[in-house]
Length: 76
Ligand SMILES: [Zn+2]
Image (cartoon, rainbow, N blue to C red):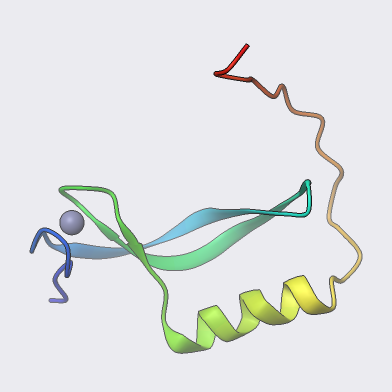
């Protein structure tokens, strides 16, 4: 069993949604395998998964769908 290096909680492998914002553009990648901490929710990705995610951002494939999501502003 892997442990979270922030809080020492147990990490469980599950499929997650990766969200990344760069230059005002938001990227959503679904079904990304990650080890998720059962205590603090911290996500850890394997080196292979991190590599795939970086490739996605560098050379995005055709998106599976275009999302229209509400966005909120805490400052307003
Ligand atoms: Zn943790």
